[in-house]
View 1 (cartoon, rainbow, N blue to C red):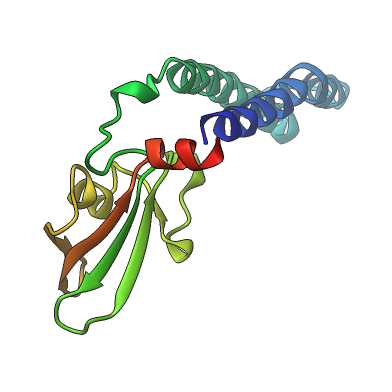
View 2 (cartoon, rainbow, N blue to C red):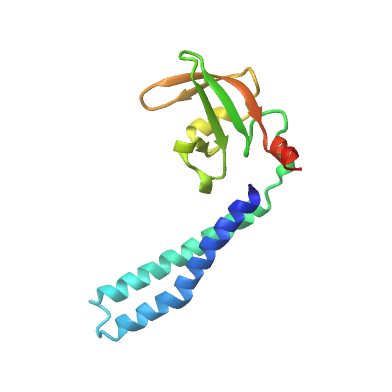
Length: 160
């Protein structure tokens, strides 16, 4: 899980660095050849993109550092945390629903992959089998019972 997100961030970092170091200088040079820079939309757009990429690269480097320094051993073994999958049952309808707590870069709500920082993710953090969870959605509240929790530690045991 951790390796996959670092690879994804590294790939994005490399693409951004290439654009900043190769593509943007070419675009600025081309725009300069068109003359007066004060009224040159191409030059202005290239400079804005350059500023954006510099900020994006800095953010990606910090995110890679944060993920790399994450100590998986500090994630609880007996309750839900980052990397956990929760198997829930809607108390009113009996419908089953699964949520997987993932890094923000891997969020896919349609696939049940949510960030621990999202409203639903916060409601699910620290839960154990038998706990009740109230998920507040804009249109309604849903009450779930936690049927099972697979933590990141359970998954690493299964991989061995």
